[in-house]
Structures are given as C-alpha cells and as structure tokens.
Length: 260
Image (cartoon, rainbow, N blue to C red; front, side, top):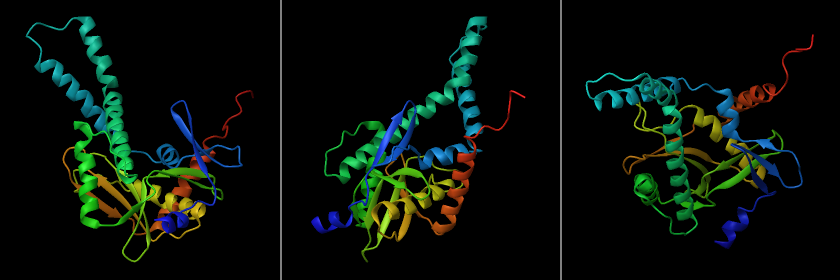
C-alpha cells in the first residue's frame, strides 16, 4: 500500500476553486484559475437531446395538471401558473438528477476510502451498481476523487478514481449516472470520451505516470446495474477536447467594437 501511494504521489498539487455556480482549478504556485474539463465541453458541445427532454418534462407537467383536474375550466391565474411551472420544470428535474448523481459519486468515493457512506433510497441502486462492478472485475481501486491540471494546455479536472489492472497498468475511470439511452444498454454519450481523453493528459502531467486505459463506468440510478465502456482512441479524443478548449477560450474574447 505504501509503495502504491508513493507511486501515486503528484508532481504538483491542484486545488478546486468554487466561485458562485462555477468552478475552476489552480495549480500550486500559480495564481491563474483554469477552466474545468466539463465546463469547457459543456460550453463548446451542443446537446441535441436536451431540448426534446425539456419539452417532454413540460408535457408531463401539463399532463399531471390535466389528469388531476375536475371538469371545471382553469382560471387565468391557474393557466399562468401552469405555464410558468412548465417552462422551468426541466431545471428542477435536472437539478434533482444532478443532486442524486453527486451523492452517488460521494458515496462511491467514501467506499474507495474505506468509509461508511450514508446511502439513502434514491442513491442505493447507483451505489450497488458500483459495488457489483467492483466484485465482478476485482481491479485494485485507488485514489478516489482526484484533482488534476495540465500546465501545458491550461485546464483542470476531477476524475473519479483510478485502478490497476492485472498487469499493473493504470486505468482511469469516470462514473456516470445518466439515464439509460434508448439506443444503448447504458447512459454513456460520445462527448464523455473527450472528457476522459483530457483527464488522461492531465493525469500524466500531474502524476508523471502513463495511463494504459480509459473507461466511462455507467451505473444505473434506477436499479443496481453497470456498464463499463472503454475509450478506444484516446489521442483522437484529446484532439477533440483541444478543439473545444480553443472554442471556449475564443468565446471569452470581445467580438465587436460597439463604440464605433
């Protein structure tokens, strides 16, 4: 264990900085704040499934109102309330899902560090999915939540855990609790590969160690099942992330002279 922890000693420390609803990373000895991997990808890559999902949430909200309603007509105020709630219901649902995902991640991190997590009913399935994966794959899990940063490319990130395979190879894992896709037996989306590609480069810089493999580990929040999905072209995925990082950086520059 001591040998493992000595091997996993970072070359420099990275700190997470929270500012309002945003977060950044800071390398020790450097006052600059670096954007996070998920912030960069969220700003640069559109999510085509988000709009239909938001519309479905609004439709479900309307359906709930109508099916619970007596035959008497709605008042004007009731209609306005229904519209207002419908317009914002997707934000509420998204925040609820994010909260569950955060607590699943925290419970998994506690398990990795040998702690006893608080497991409420709404995160039980996700945590049990991770435990089932651990039992079946028998990898040596280390570190848990780990802050990384690339000094070269100026970004930071937080990976969920690393593990060593049977040959001693180092493998990065990022846990996902997204809803299962209709076209797959998991909830992993292509942009997650860009995220993992960025983590690989940042980890290799921060720790000075080569990474053998990258996995997105999906755990279902609704029932205890899992699906590990391996990234097959990490270098290409990193190029995709760099393109997003470039677009993100350029978005911070002023585009017009409004005084002319």
